[in-house]
Image 1 (tube, one colour):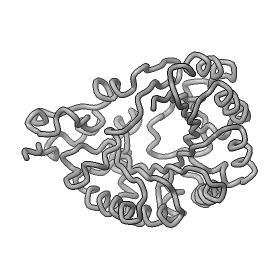
Image 2 (cartoon, rainbow, N blue to C red):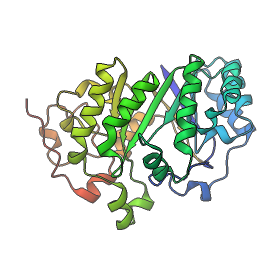
Image 3 (cartoon, one colour):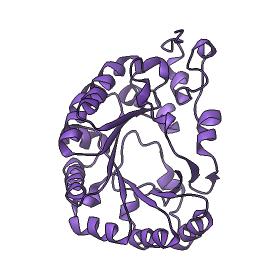
Image 4 (spheres, rainbow, N blue to C red):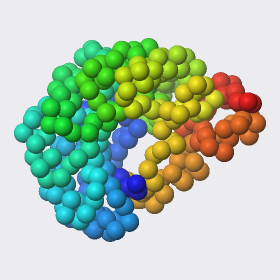
Length: 300
């Protein structure tokens, strides 16, 4: 399936300490309803699915209208990528489902309110998001979860996995933090937010195994093959749908190509690895901080 991701704007009711969008909410205005509908019209013949993302799409009053418009244009999969807080209101869930939303990608970054809320910086966000998962589950919806791996939460990935399994989600992903320019330029934020990949891996694998044993679809994102021994089948980059991204004032027509040529990087020893041709490497900012010493080519 091919899909188009549309960033509706960058306003958000969370202010996550690790957010890859950085300070875009201060720099760019939200797209208008008219602009979004124009993108939908332009892309509906080329793509099977659409992802409404941001920022936080659920805080827009026109989201039900946009979902209905996408459905009328023939998009088969209409995904809402969200922090999940608005889905704590069951009538809101029902309204979006009625309009045509049929896939929900939520984010949970801790197994307790203390951990999750400390990362989103919004007290009560954990309770709202977990209630949102329960509401969507009770309505028979497909729920895909994302947890961003950070220094405060990486040791708790197995506990997060257990919680997500118990909540009955269809899929969960551990995504290594994508270091934005605000973090990259701040030694304090780097120290607080960004762990070393080699340290997180035992917890990543334990968390993945919990999902695998429970029959839940699991994956990682932005963790190269050389860290994923015995778990190579769970690398998201192998299955991320082809498609375009409509960002702030620009668009990327082939996001897969962008990731490989501009977003990510490979080190001096990577060509020696048997996974060289399929591995995308880490986001390029990571080796700018930690270098390439952790990345060991897989020979056989």
